[in-house]
Image (tube, rainbow, N blue to C red):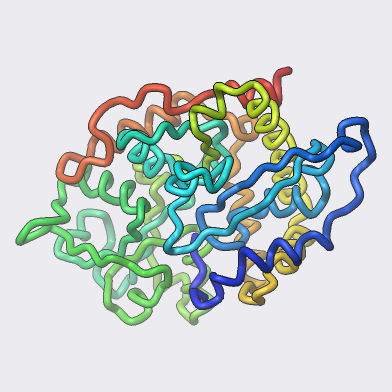
Length: 345
């Protein structure tokens, strides 16, 4: 999910607003388009990259404009918490993983999932084969790299299910607070590190490691996956019919963007590269990211949150006893009001 070029982050947000506008195509003029466009802001979970390609494509192709929306995309970074941005009024919609969103909701912020874009998980734990690890039973006594800032929750749930302690004087596994790069595995500081199937795994390959040198444990295959990129708003937005209408139009245009990106991947990569005015993205890596992301969209209707997937995520988080992510069943944590208005009305 992450890119290693931290020094460019500060310039990405401002530069994007100037750069991507030139890509927008002219949408058909409608009665709605003749009116002043409704402003809407989207806060990303991370920097401009293939993880968010559908939104960039929808903006560049004029799909938001056709829905009478003036969308602003706000890239994230290591010091940006999307939920805090939402709570502070800095964005209308944010992208977050459900474990982080549910933890935020339990702390008192009324954040609500209105669409679940990634229906499959890209989360992995990638290990060096020369570390001696062959199965999860071999994690004990090893150092494992983990992202924090909300991304540690699925890992902690998995370790709890395995019966491994991750804290205290003598933990079963040593948790290395992993930076947003793959250095700990390359430098043998950890036996395994967190990777995403569409990003960090390929960073390892691009750094010179061979697939035969790596052993990948996919959270989905280990039955410990939790829901990742979803769209979240504050409950107050759902209490306002005008905002619900605006959000429904946002979902419709976003779906068009994701559909287009999945079927026109070469063009989608070019749109990403043009949006990256800081020049930190590479065509090879973004091509791999866009291809990998397309596999996470699932086969259910775009953005539809399946109750079973939601409940599985909740149960995984409740299973973490030593470091609870959430302590009770959430109430009102998702709503299909916007989705139904977008795709059923």
